[in-house]
Image (cartoon, rainbow, N blue to C red; front, top):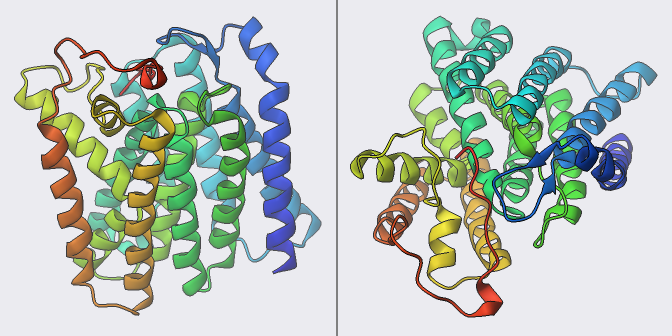
Length: 339
């Protein structure tokens, strides 16, 4: 308990400080979000990756961390994904390259001995989907960080229930690091995650969830995993469905995410992020309670149904036509990137 509190507090503080300290170097190196009316340095992602690895690694080196539970392998694979994301932040790699690299990293750490080969391969696909889903949420101030914090806490709770203290500790440190990042990412954002931070965070969360659910039934696990990452899943379904039905390339970026549509309905950037974060928290709580057996698995259908209602309701909001005029108080732009 003492280690967990100390590690989380250290991660939060160090990430907040490092995110700010790396802003100027990131601006000078042009490591910035280029698809925005103002340059936002991508120092937040680098800070989250470095601090999470440093705090967890230091705990294991000092012998005060809980049993590893596979965390060294997960951290190594997440580091490779973070490096791949950093290269994408600098040179803009093709999505197929990012997907292939993430898939290989996931395939190296999925616990096939508990999941089986077939289910393990499905888990690899799900990990890649979560990674790209969280990356897509990085277009709005505070949204990707909020989704990451909520999902990481949910996975930490599931891992703790299974007495997987290493995974639970890793998730707690990641959640704290993302919280420190959010201190600079809330509207108006001064730093962003970029592919480096969003992809590595999504990878750790998704793989941790796979570890926590390994050995359970496939159908029930699919429901729990969706509930833990409901915001990521709903946003991805909405975006892909809209682009597909609209005759646009599914890999073509556009202002068609959940937050974009809520902004068009008049919400402010913080309001949109808070509303979506509340929805993510609700789904996560249902997922944790279902995993713990405190509620029936039928409740997971309510999460899926609620997400579907939101997707269908916001699907009708026009996003590709001319933007209607709004008051100056709510006219601050969202980033349109890589979504």
